[in-house]
Structure formats: structure tokens, C-alpha cells
Length: 282
Image 1 (cartoon, rainbow, N blue to C red):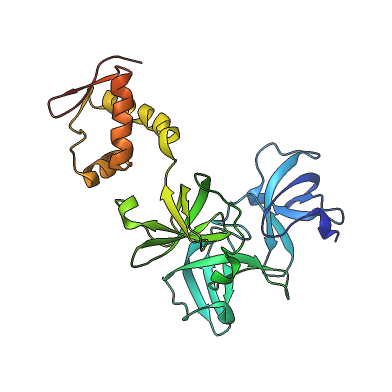
Image 2: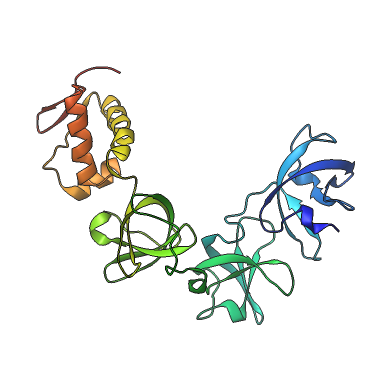
């Protein structure tokens, strides 16, 4: 098999070679990779290009699926343990075949029903997709690839004394301080944020959401929509409780105040009855 044309554990776009009773074979530069019939979209034809995820089945054959796993290679995800054996544990990752975590890749031992933060990787010995709890070695702040105010993808790793330790772009470690969020975050939660501060020792402070007025531009539309959904009036203002603002609007009080200030200057809202009121239709 010419595996340089394909990549295991990620999505590939392959061409349909031929059909058989039990599915379709996709072009891998050799005999072809089976896409089982139950995963074939309607009206698939020879020569069509189709996006599929590739992994090994129970017989160690590479197989294609249009199912979407909860994570691909190098992703850090929170998965539920569904079976335990003397050799390791199996986690549900959204496919018919569960992902394996070798016992040597577990930190304290896994139990059925438990939720575990793992990184998906390719096992060098078997070439198969596997998962590991030993994720810290993957991340380093020694050489940074991010800068202040840059938008980044975040995965919550754990709660600390100061806030939430997060994985940044699957490369670095940062911290969201408790003061920056108004709801509990759980390991495995994914969110968008931005780099607030990079310290001299390369420690990174992160904020959820988008920076400054770039974020306000999006939030103005959100507040206008919510006003329209509530007959043009909402009982929130610049003195409202921060947690109540976050619960209702999903934004910090600072962003809320900036946003309603922008809408007031645009004469789209007025302050009335201890709240905000819509003054015109968009």
C-alpha cells in the first residue's frame, strides 16, 4: 500500500475507484481503502472525491468512514472510558471502534464511566491511532509561536489556584484568571481566546473571546438581536451584576459596557427603566 498518499488518524479527500456489494473502494495509490456501505452518502459515483477519516479496524486494516470522531491526531480532547482491560482502556471517540489508551499511557488508571483528558497520537510501533494522558510533554513555552492580542484556540486542561490552565493552539500552556470568566470551565472545554500578556519568563495570560473593539463589533449584533427577542427592552445596565450579565449575554461586564456604549453612540439604544431599550429597527 502506498501510504504516502494517505494520512492515518486525520481527514483525507480520496477518489472513488470502484463499488462492491459491501461498500466502495477509495484510491490510495494501491488496492484501495474500503468505505463501508453504511457510511456511503447517497448518489456516490466512481470518480467522485469524498472526505473521509482513516483509521485501523479490529483486523488492523485501514478503513475509511464519513463518521466524525471527537478528535483527530494531535487534538487534546475529553473522552469517556467505556471499557478496561489488563492492557489498557478504551474510550468513546465518536466512531464505531473505540480508541485505545495503553496502560503505560495512563496517569492513575482509568475506570469505566470516567472522563479523561487525552491527546490523540499515532503509536510508532503499531502505526495505529491511540490516546495518551501524558500530554504535558507535547507543550512548551520555550519558543513561542504566538504574540499578544493574537486570537488562539484553547482547550481547558485543569483548574489551578489562580484560574484555568489552558492549552494554546495545541502548542503552549497559558492561564485564564478566575476574574476573566464568570462560569465554571471543565477539562476538555474548547473556546476561542486571545493572548493578553506574555511575561518575561514566557508565561502567558489568556483572555476568553476576542480583544477590544473587534469583539464589540460582534457583540453589538448580539445585543440588538436579544432586544428584539424581548420586545425591545432588557433589564440590564452598566451597574448590573457581572455574573448576571455573563449568564444572560455570555460576555464579561467590561465588554457589555463597551458594547452598550457603542450602541448608545450609534443611537440604536437608550437607557430607560433601569435597563436598555431599542430605539430603532435595523
